[in-house]
Length: 147
Length: 163
Image 1 (spheres, rainbow over the protein chains, first blue to last red):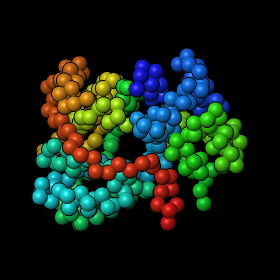
Image 2: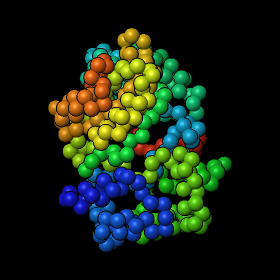
Image 3: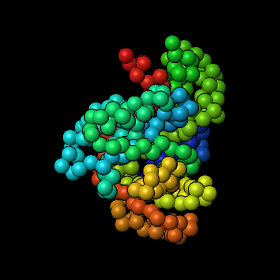
Image 4: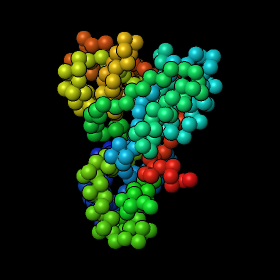
């Protein structure tokens, strides 16, 4: 990845135009030919640096709900519990973290009232108490990761 | 029955094609005009249904190997001010206010910081605590050890579409 790749990534993280020829507009603001931008984007996608570009949805605005939840899992049960939790289709991602609360996952449901049911089902399956930390407010962040 | 907006969101959620008229290509699939698609996408972004429209970057290929969730216990009357300050810092990737969970987990402000390694994240956090005036508040850094599961995009209409 060279300097131009980094500029492309940083520029696109600020947003992508919604207009007839969006790549031409981005290329013009970077001062490069559009063909070069398209070719570089394709190779950044192929190499896995970029996963996709397009929308990031706002779950609540679409009628759904998201929450962050945590479990304190005994080390001896960690693998077993992670399989139980990950088997729920509503669990969108799950991270092991260095803390006594060592499993942190996001639950995404189609309707807000389903969150409580999923969390209770996880408690029933694992026998562990789930801490539920839905967002109260999100503070807007511009650039996600500087390349 | 899905609405036109839901069809549009489904069609764009996996990303735009790389070609000179990407919206035209999606409009053709949906049997609508490019102008109509652009108009609806702009409206969805204005309403906040689409909160961001840009690239989704993977942090590991960029060399960001340490990922930390940092939690802070700040006074409720200052959480908005401090949340705005923290989120304006370039190293902060996400910033949320969440409910405290009693004495065991008294934190109400969460942020994510990615770094090349743990030492770099810790150094960023020390600097941010000073810059944002957070030094007096109780906080913890939770580094990730492993990511077990990372599902892709959000599906509008969700499971009902798939059975």
